Amino acid sequence: MLGWFHQHLTALRQALSQFGRNPFANLIGVLVIAFSLSLPAGILRLINQAAFLSEGTLHEPHLTLFMSLDADDAAVRSVWDGLAARTDVREFRYISSTQALAELKATPGLAEAIGTLDRNPLPHAFVIRARNTAPQALESLRATLARWNKVERVQVDSAWAKRLDALLQFARRGTGGLTALLTVALAFTVFSTVRQQVLAARGEIEVTHLIGATAGYIRRPFLYFGVLEGILGAMAAWLLLWLGRRWYNDAIQPLSDLFAVNLSLAGFSLREGMLLCLTSAGLSWASSYLSVSLTLRRLSAKR
Amino acid sequence: MITLNTVAKRYPDGHEALRGVTLDIEDGEMVLVTGRSGAGKSTLLRLMSGIERPTSGSLAIHRQEITRLSNAARARLRRNIGLVFQDHFLLMDRSVEENAALPLHIAGLYGREAKRRVATALEKVGLENQARTSPLALSGGERQRLCIARAIVNRPRLVIADEPTGHLDQGYASVILDIFRSFNETGVTVIIAMHDAAFETSSPCRILRLEDGLLSGDTETASSEAL
Image (cartoon, rainbow over all chains, first blue to last red; front, side, top):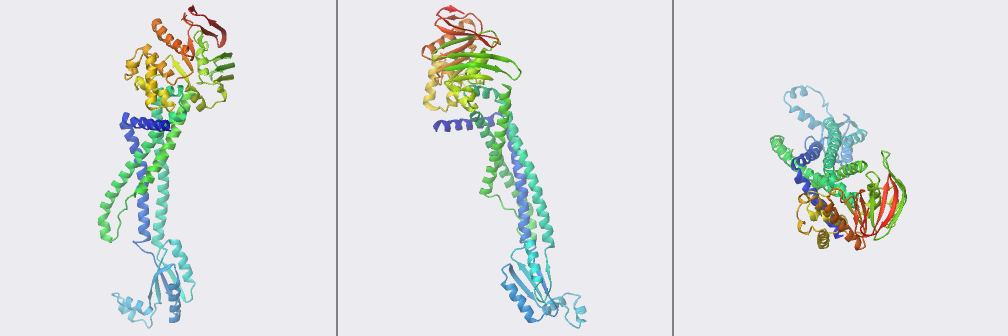
């Protein structure tokens, strides 16, 4: 057990000394990994922030229910009670035809025109805010309410929300593609760096192989190196994301003040940071395993 | 200890290095493998040390059939064999003692016991005062002695040396061979490949002669005979 621990400690020490031997090339490798991780992570954070704003603060999609012109007080009462009983309706506001006409008359330039009418042409209406503001949920609620008695029309104010949602879906897909591409870049960077090191240590590999080292023993320091490079890359990505968030929040502050809306980006939590490091370490491990195994196979074929 | 039964080795380029070699080597024997360049000496030693597998025939080392062992099992088997190479195969970026300790570290032995074994091995080959120096500072003969120290540090029952005196002058070659003889006197089986050069034996040994991949001679010599 102690021997096993010492072997791993020695492999770790060898991996660390590899960083010291070629600091510039290794730094470039770490930076490539950092950009490969921070770019999709940063974009996804921006998209999620935009989605959050679109669902909440900025527009709050709502429905407007117009009753038929012949709807009496009993019909209005029935709709009122129906809305109050629904769990998917967060709140609603009733606007009577008289109130609507009064509001219209208060509009400059319209009072005179409205005064010529012999009767009130406006229906009773309800402005409804749903609990779930996703476009599909709003559409489903609209269809249900439209079937109610004495309801003329139900209008969903979600066209803008639909467009934004479609845009965000597209952006998410684009980021998914970008993430896949940059994951390949990360894997290739680690693969290439480890391969260079295996080739440089060819002599040592030959010696240790001859005197009884298994492939696992030979592979170990290279795997440690790959994982270390991945973790360092993830930490650098975390730093880049922190710097990027600071820059963004400083730039967006005047706009936030103007709209009285909090547009600032939330930082990456410790859990998210750890997840980033674990993902990068796992990818780097797999990549270095593949690299060292393929290179060793090629070297042993030449022997 | 080692049993070969009609062992043949053909390399991917078509070269047939060994053709149906059959022999037994018992515990505690001192064996010299001789023959011209290309006779198959190195191939025979690589097979007997488990570095390579025979193309056909059977080969057992310590009663383990080589052809049935996985790569990892063959690697573990080699930890119990002391290997000495003509080209030393030393790690020049490590100190003398680090080179000698390598087989112990591969076997998972570290700490005081490892240091003690390294010191003993270096003492046996007369390099105890150069433990901290780099192999680059050693002469050819000293490097070969370090290679021997590395081979015996794990206390193997079998030492295989492929032309260990190939790059050395006659005087130094005798020193190296005396070291091997001293191991053999303690019961260690020693197998050495040598060119067809005159070699004075001061103790009895078995001589295997290879010609074009075939075993053409298997004789015992008394002391002070010339090959």
